Amino acid sequence: HALTAAGLIRRIEPAGGAPRFEGRVGDNHHHVVCRSCGVVADVDCAVGEAPCLTASDDHGFSIHEAEVVYWGLCPSCSTASSS
Figure 1: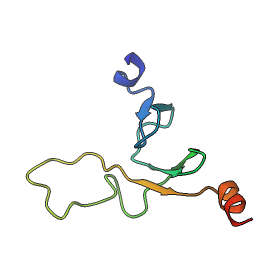
Figure 2: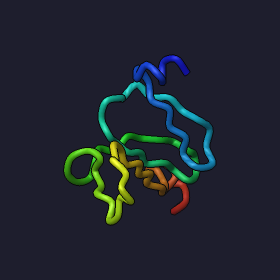
Figure 3: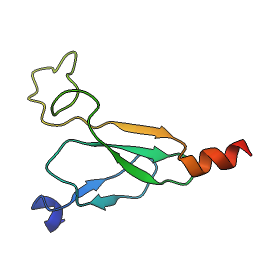
């Protein structure tokens, strides 16, 4: 908790998965998660500057970050499922 609070690591917790920690901090990147084996990879922002996405209605919030998780099958699992 201390490392996360100090901004030295980032905690991510993809839905249905165990919490993970990563050293890539200070930017607003996203993740791609394999639905079969659970492997996680970093994905840079798709468009524009952080927070990457502009909300259609921010409801008065000052948005600092957007979280996007892409779900699919990694190359290994895609190959295995097509055999």
